Image (cartoon, rainbow, N blue to C red; front, top):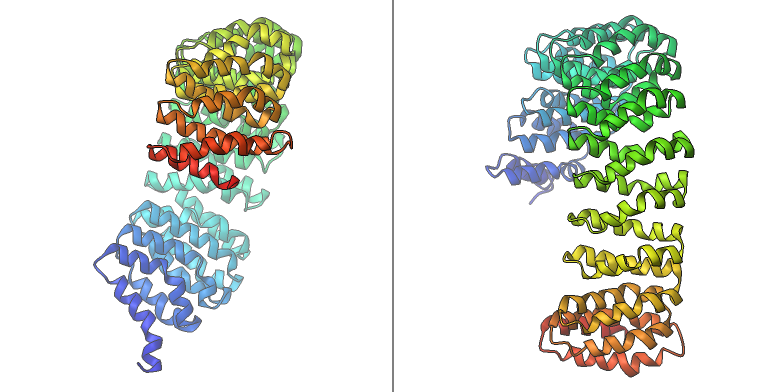
Length: 586
């Protein structure tokens, strides 16, 4: 093969694969473009490969999607930023195809290439591309154009910037709702680039027009634009330009618009400033908390603590708290669940006295809710309340409910309680814990759900770390080991799991005196599952025993013979785990 045909070989492979009937081969060729480009060199990539790719736009969507992504990272393969404009043509074509994902990826790649262009390249190639897409006959190209203005604007000349603002205005008034939607999506990013003078003169009128659009799918997208624009203005300007719009949005006839406002209310409040928030937004927020659509109330419930941080305590008690009380008994379980997740965030804001008086009764009510997710959410956030009012008050008022939930018919609720127990134990102290919760922790070891039994064994290790080995030796270990002789194999299995979980938290002496006899007895258990878990348990015990010169000999005297016996077992799994455990001690 002569040198020239060798040089042509990579491009020949690519062309063959790109034209192949098999989509996977074409896709593979696209993903190997950088390799091909390296083989061809910069000049041939610019002159042969890019034009060829530009002609290959008529293909399966997944191939085009891969191509749009690859071209965004292709500048270095064509000779650097001075040639980056060559990539614009194929990406322009990809930005006008029918498939949304391909267009979005092409826009993303164009936004990566745009900052690499010089002002001359931008004026000569990028801005004409933007005009062609903006004036395209099909809505697809106009939709893509909306995402390309923010990136190019800061680099353009003042005359081009003026044209860009006018062109974006045309897209905001497009006849096709999809284009107006895209314009609303990208208006916020464009607003941040235009400077304050043009923001007020050009962008705010566009925003107001979109905010009053007949399509709710357009109006709802202007909520994030409002946040972005308000961040660029002073509180006084925000109030002057947006107060009326905000009132309209909160009362919009479409629940989806109200939902968007509710979901972004804290961001919005921070953007417009504290004074505007205190004077005008409290009433708007109360309206959203009382909205007739459950989805809106759910979104607003999630904003309660964040919004409360921006207003004074009296306003919370007089306006927000009455709404929260109503939401605790809301007809929608999703609203109550959202509130349960967030209500504890009010405790640090209100302080100890107000939390005890106003919030504790609501926590108690939510803990007794019929919907498991509500109970689960309130439990998972009790730590925040504990920091404010202290464990004594919390345990007096909520402990009975927590004990009741520990036997909840929903296993996920029981699991959440188990996860909370070590924290509770740390705060309560050993005497109170033994009296109120000790029996409960042991009862979980016999639960019908495996995840609960497993979590209960981990819980015992954490409790041993909190209360010390002596406590475990007297309180937990005898009860755990007694289960090792239970006729039901699941209880014997739980003993093994508990021993394995607790091994790192107890001393070598405790293992020698208490745990080893039970383990060696279970080596001969009739159930293979028990035997291979014994092998895993021995593997966990060996490192602990080796830490102490007095207990290290036990590894050779007792554990190694037990593992050798198990390694000759009739069951494959037992042999596998025992041989694995033997490796470190051979």
